[in-house]
Amino acid sequence: MLRVLAGHAGPVRCRRVAEELGLEITARSVERVRQRLKKAAAAGVVVKTPGGLFTLARVPAAAGG
Image (cartoon, rainbow, N blue to C red):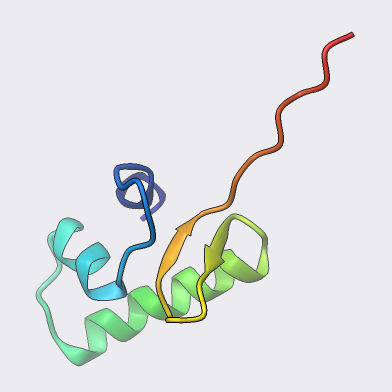
């Protein structure tokens, strides 16, 4: 799922993620993707937009020293 999100410049719908993963598009499969992305958002790996789309979380640049 993260690779799918990484391949897009902006936020993506759960249905689009499911399609690109090659899943059969059913309400159940899209909901499974949504639940996994919500868990990833809770862990700070992805960001959920107010519209329900998901994108990768931005990683802060490492401080040079």
